Image (cartoon, rainbow, N blue to C red):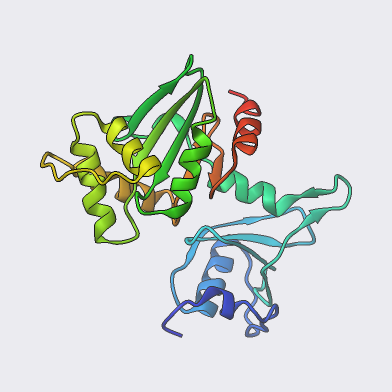
Length: 238
């Protein structure tokens, strides 16, 4: 098997493996990758639920198997004692980052009100949901917004990102485009920060825009309305 179409691959919830018995996490990794036919496993750890092993894939997805890799489960574990969605909690943890490690010098900074609350957002200038998000962020006060130009849609996104980054007033150029559709004029400068953002985002498994991060490291994927953003910002515990 030379490719890795994960969803179709795991559509059948059960895979009966060979008679080989796997004894540790290393062997579980080996068994899963033998099934898939590619080195796709990021980590393996044993859970406290029914002898299941958690397998985190390099794509950021999470599946479960047993010590023998006799099946692969693409689903959720619910703790019946606490009614907690264990899988979702783990995915949230895996998606979180060290907020202080973000390369803030590669972002456009805007301060609203006292700027006491902080949010970072990776955005493509041609992303429709980023434009809608900008309208919602206009309604948020007392916040510092770090916008990382993250052109992943097309070459025009790259060109607009470079021109916005090279503008004499980056924040004004970004807002003029994202809020009012005023195309940034062509400007030349060292725009390597745009390339660095894309490289960094790929390492952080940022596959779509907008992708936002709160000060406590939690990831917020996708467009959110102002009330949802207010609730998320208010829930931050540093």
